[in-house]
Image (cartoon, rainbow, N blue to C red):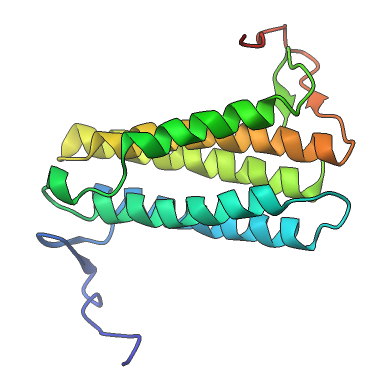
Length: 192
């Protein structure tokens, strides 16, 4: 099998239900999710070589998230989404909430905005967070213009919260403090 097909040489690509321009809002949305997936893979690679803490739990979850990001892209590939064929489910979003609670318990209290950074793994997880937010924005735009499965947007919204939380947890596991935005006022309170 050849990797190149030449079918996209005129600036169009296939989606389930037809062909669209490569800069179509739908393609931009699932393309941004693909970009996010690449950054998740990079973050996992950095964690895998980190020896100062045990990362097995997070590595396992990041791998599952990579599969679920493919599910998100698959769901967005439908020009006219068919509910019975969608792969992203509310249970996936709910599971992220449980993981967020788990990792948030490992972090020191937060009251102010923090600067993205700390250790290399945390920095990459913050990159994942920001790319995830962009993917979510692309999905919101898509939903305003064309049929779009709602659950993908909800999943991405929660996933960005997950990346924020695990970036902080990664720093905490390494004994690194998050750097607070110094001109910010207290804005966060721990949920009970």
